[in-house]
Image (cartoon, rainbow, N blue to C red; front, side, top):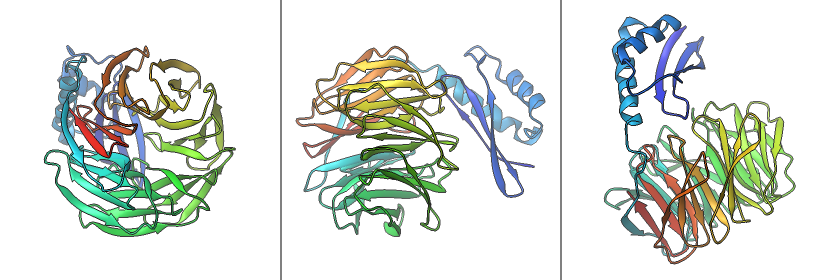
Amino acid sequence: AKLKFLKVKSYQTTSVREGRKYRNQERFIHISLSYYRMSTDVIALVEEIQKQEPLITVSCKEHVIHLVRRLQEKLGEKKDHKFYLFKVLRTHILPLTNVAFNKSGSRMHQNACKLRHDKIATGSFDKTCKLWSTETGKCYHTFRGHSAEIVCLSFNLQSTLLATGSMDTTAKLWDIEKGEEIVTLSGHSAEIIALSFNTTGDRIITGSFDHRVAVWDVDTGRMLHTLMGHRGEISSAQFNWDCSLIVTGSMDKTCMLWNAMTGTHIATLIGHSDEILDVCFDYAGQRIATASADGSARVYNAETRKCIAKLEGHGGEISKVCFNPKGNCILTASSDKTARLWDAATGHCLQILEGHTDEIFSCAFNYKGDIIITGSKDNTCRIWH
């Protein structure tokens, strides 16, 4: 056995995530640090971890100490941060559909907005996807190839690939640095409106109006299996952090949990009175958040499948929901032209982000949780610091 990598993550319950390699197969373990505090002696803590885990040798001890000290700094950050409008991006000729950050949150894509380290991606009704700098607003690439509107997009965690889903029933994978198409995923019989990579980057899932979720091999573009059980169009789909579970949301007003390896249905989460428009896991995979056309969002315990918080206050349907990396805040986007920040534990509204002049259809945190992007039908993306 060889230690391949080690990560420290700040969840509601802190843990060290360790990747071991056995005969070319990666396996993961979690070392709980639930007793960890700002006053904890870091060196003594790492020495205690070494006693539990022999793969953490003397040669990597200093690196572990560095990681845990960075975590200590993160835990000491102020929790009452208020976001302010930093920049407005006027991007596509036709309206946006989604936005996303890359891992570091420095670039952006249009229509569907997603954040990656230093990039944002946006997708649009103009059938293109654009990659932007979050700092300067510069457009790095325009991805062309879909024959209909791009309505969803996602970065892989490694920040090397961007996936786009379209009303043309296909998804495409793009090389972020080269700006080139890598593969087209074909197999759905209706529009693709949701997609997401797993954390290791070797699988991607797509959700379609054909009521199915497909699991694909990223390297080959081959469909591995489909998740069937929803009685309505799929609106959202996501892997949990350790890639063992998939959560899906549907227009049938339900949210379903699936075994990611076998495609077996595990559970159905109910409670919303209207269509579910978005679903997500927190970074620890311990909680699931849902957003609905009934104007509310809900938080469920992933293990017990019980609703533990209700987020109520928007004046219209909620189209997007996501946890911040720490897991203590939830961000929602609504047709009432606002985005809201919520306390994930209590459901209390912490801040309302106002300024868009039309419905907000997408929102996201960057990887550090200190930048937010919102995408709206007013054809702008707003960056909040």
